[in-house]
Image 1 (cartoon, rainbow, N blue to C red):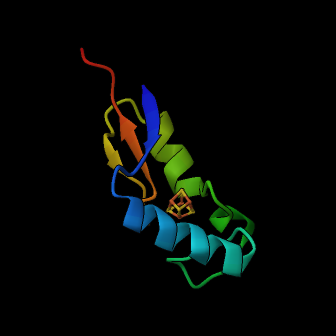
Image 2: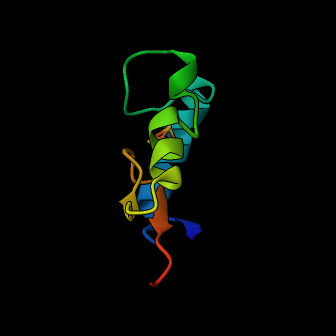
Length: 68
Ligand code: SF4
């Protein structure tokens, strides 16, 4: 399992700027709850899910599944 940044630097820049503005809360969610502090609960659960491969909701991170 590997977590990498989106290879699209433009997306990374936009999401990181958003995170700076929110003070660490997910920029693509309205609720400022502890679950939405980056890395958010949803992405942590996706990381823990052996079947999940893909981007986090904001597309900042990509989770690569192990080849099996
Ligand atoms: S992991 Fe992705 S979706 Fe979750 S808070 Fe961070 S940028 Fe947003």
